[in-house]
Amino acid sequence: MILPSDTPAIEIRGLARRFGRTDAVQGLDLVVPTGSCYGFFGRNGAGKTTTIKCLLNLLRPDSGTVRVLGLDPAKDELQVKRRLAYVPDQVAFYPWMSVRESLDYAASFREHWNTTAESDLLDRFRLDVRKPVNGLSKGQRTQLALISAICVDPELLVLDEPTSGLDPIVRREFIEAVIGAYQDADPGRRTVFVSTHLITEFEGLIDRFTIIEDGRATLTLDSDEARAKFRKITARFPGEAPELKIPGVLRQSRAGREVTLITNGATDGVLAELRRSQPEDIRTEALSLEEIFVVASK
Picture 1 (cartoon, helix red, strand yellow):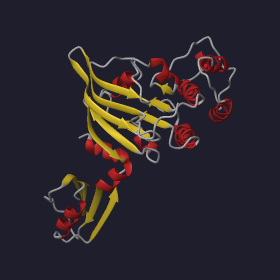
Picture 2 (cartoon, helix red, strand yellow; picture 1 turned 180 degrees about the vertical axis):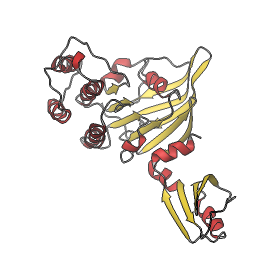
Picture 3 (tube, helix red, strand yellow; picture 1 turned 30 degrees about the horizontal axis):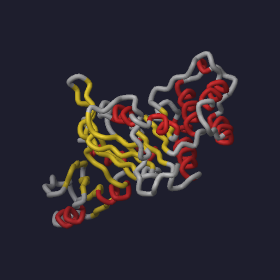
Picture 4 (cartoon, helix red, strand yellow; picture 1 turned 90 degrees about the vertical axis):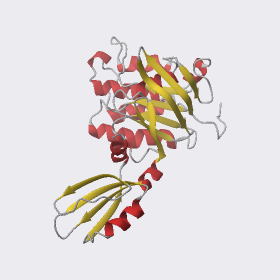
């Protein structure tokens, strides 16, 4: 089934989920365009995993609506799960199986299995198919889960901290080569929804993102728009840097002759005001997505 071009891969409206007296998610709205790589950022306990479990019908919302690939995951659970793949932050396999048996078992539940991708990923991760699962490290189990997810060629790939158990070299290779290749194989149709705290490593892939705090969305922007909006200005003075009071500055820090200002869409006005203090040099640069997350979360 091919989604109409205007149908979001994920659409959440007014989602709320409580655990006793704790509001894990509160009135969350989120729309993930089909064919995008969408980042879902937040601190531990912000509500990211609860939201994902509502998407997968592992939890039922207390209120609000959830649509995945245009379907209600509570009413059309089988259809939804046939068309997506999910890698949780904690993966588990039957410990008595080998890597080969685990992959064959996963493939038995799917109509399609990409054996070429499987072979390539096993080589890339250097996984021995004869090795028992209970002899794998945490990182190797994560690799096995990622292979199982990628090989079904899903329309939607949902990743919850997918690289937390991988070493830095494998992590970067997976992000750049595997996720990039997954989307490039069917441009415009394959969607990645990734919840992660390793934002820097996804910097070049994220098209749009939402930051969630205490169960609420605090910022949603296209990545390019965010980089254009949030700017870091560094000014150097002939003597000790003065303490500046300029409207439109989110954060300010001083070190010796330099002062650093963070702006949010008010860069031109801040620069004009800053020049009145007669610095000898001014530099501006875009913030990274991780820096934007840190600023927006305080």
